[in-house]
Each structure stands twice: as C-alpha cells, then as structure tokens.
Length: 164
Image (tube, rainbow, N blue to C red; front, side, top):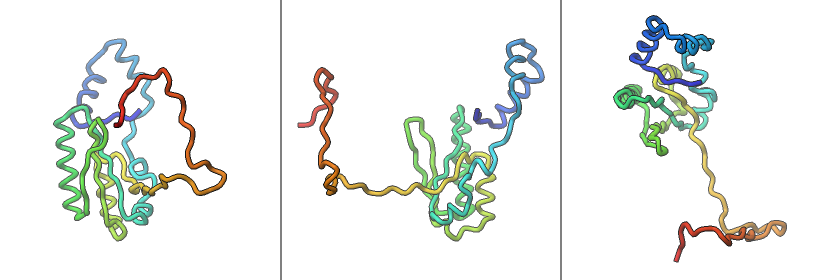
C-alpha cells in the first residue's frame, strides 16, 4: 500500500501509536510489517541512462489529501527545477488533477542533478517520456485484412450522441 505522508500526518500517526489505546487501533497497527520510504529505485526504475537516451522525461508528483500540502509541493518543485536549470513545463492530467512535469534536454544532464531531483521527497516517478506514433486511419493495403470491419448491431441501444 502506498500512503502519502507529510510532517503533520507522520506526527499524527506517532501520536496515535503512542497515546491511543483502543483495541481496534491496536489491531490495525499490529498488521503493519514495515514502513519503507519511497526509494530512488521506485522513483526511477528505468534508471537515468534511459532518461538520457530519450532526452525527455515525465515527472509525476505525489498528491496529498491536503490542498495546502499539494500547493507547497508544487511551489517547491518549481523552485527545485529552476535551481537545477532544467528545461521544463507543467501540466495537469486527469480528473483528479495530477501534476506532471515534462523535462527536456536531459541527454547531457549531470548525474548530480538527477540525484538531487530523485532525492526530493515529493517525486513519485521520473520516467522517460512515452513516444507516440501516428497510426494509419485509412485502412490496410494488405490483401488479407479487410479495409473496413463490420460494425456490431446497435438495435435496441439508446442514442447517446448523433452526428448530422
């Protein structure tokens, strides 16, 4: 289980462990085997060589259940990438507002800069930017593949949208 934590949530957990003596809490705490930090290997499983070869990467930040902590994280990451002199742009993805950072020009970045970036506690994942390829939409020219596929019957289904 991956649980995002910050200073206040860790202090609250400490308080629960030391001060609350409720049977249900003790039972829940007793099943925790260990608590591990989010390591560099988890943040960058493809390694920095893959980032250099691709030349660009996506950096995903942790998202906390606390808006103030998210805003503080966002500002801290902006300051960090500016301090490191990394070319970047931010964007939001998805309905939950995950923040991503697209880094470019990574082919010649010093390992020390990767160390600083991957050591930052708010970094969830740093991965090579995915490559997207254009696919043919006009159909296949192969004699073995039909140019159009038969559509399934829509009889009895409601109309969701109609084009004119």
